[in-house]
Image (cartoon, rainbow over all chains, first blue to last red):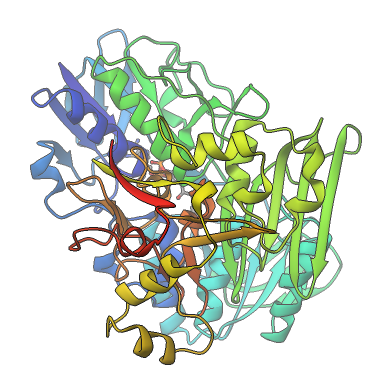
Length: 424
Length: 145
Ligand SMILES: Cc1cc2nc3c(=O)[nH]c(=O)nc-3n(C[C@H](O)[C@H](O)[C@H](O)COP(=O)(O)OP(=O)(O)OC[C@H]3O[C@@H](n4cnc5c(N)ncnc54)[C@H](O)[C@@H]3O)c2cc1C
């Protein structure tokens, strides 16, 4: 059996571990267009100077040897030929596979803005390490003291975290009326906005960039939808990522937003699997397929794909969006559906002394949670969402400061706290 | 593998488990020094739950497929060869993905140091976890599973 894996990040690594749990000998070849393994979420810590380059990896140095895999660095796959079961690389190599995993992750979205060109100095995305290394050089060489970030979603705020640690003043331009609009409502956003203001930064909401002004291929200023012009030497484009599905072009691979997979993480072409940010697997809450571009999903999906590639049936039972973001010392954790449309949902709220909790219920079951400055024991909410526990009778208790298993029904507690064959 | 069994019916609410857990994980290993060295209560690696008269101590369950390990962005959270889920503070960046992922809510963040503040290590190196050893009413037991 020959396994070929495209991309060498968390989904790929989880898949490799699973394959090797089952099958110690089959050939595994990994192709990556990058030159190292690094934890992508750590790039903001790297920018901040809090984690050094040699500490960005999340696998031991001996991983390749231990797992008996061949890694081809700086080698992109440029074409998949499912009929011949081959992939073609940027180095014109042709590799045969029996099982293929596409774990190509996400690629930054570049919105069409007048005046934009790829070669204007001073414009960066914030997804890959090589880009961040260039960004750091640029900041140091040009003694950058201020910056504009386009997009106040997860990646924009992560970039903000890194830049603020370098004492760079920010102007964050965002189309929505709040920060982290996918998860936060206005009240939660306000807690962060206050901190941003304290740091001397500015949040320009309900605003977009209409035009990029450059001179001799160097960024000079930005024209905003509000009519204002911001002079700046640095722009971070952080409007989001989309699944990297380039390789599906010209094949029969079924693509929606990402590569559509079944519960075994297999695409519509037998033998070809997909996992992570590139894949569209089951969303636990809606039951539909959706791209949920977060680390734990990539890890789980990769692992399930790996087992199936090695011939052991494994199923992905679906996950839901969740994240943990700390900005300017304000920690927040969110789960699921946090900004429901009006209707069948009920919202429980508490917002006292800077501690913010929001719980979204549907038919007595938790479907979404936002916690700001109150993240202790957050994971229990994730458990409640997953277990679909009816909490209709516990609405008050859910917001308690000392919320824990003791406010939950005894049989639920017994079952979970001590596991099989034991008692609470 | 041995597991800690919790029996809330037997818990007296004395919190000796917490006291001895904090002590066992302190530098001095001495109760008095441990409690005098900090303001307030020193951080233990277990969660003590209390609502009215019902109480119990909850430790890391050392899950087989541990969600905290899966979610950890730096591989600071890992499993040793005995199946114990351990935490490497050097690698931790305080992203709180483990706090988000742990279904038992037993990992405590140290928001100041920006690192996991405490996490049950099953008292690696001791014959019996300190909380079990010092529970006067067998509300927490060690059992081979
Ligand atoms: C700044 C930032 C912060 C984040 N913070 C968090 C966080 O706090 N929590 C969280 O859960 N998630 C976070 N994420 C998301 C998380 O990083 C991703 O969900 C995760 O990395 C997805 O893993 P993956 O294996 O699917 O793909 P990726 O990590 O995207 O890796 C895909 C790899 O495939 C390579 N590749 C692509 N095409 C080819 C090709 N044709 N040939 C060869 N190689 C190719 C890519 O270069 C890349 O190395 C963050 C992301 C970013 C950018």
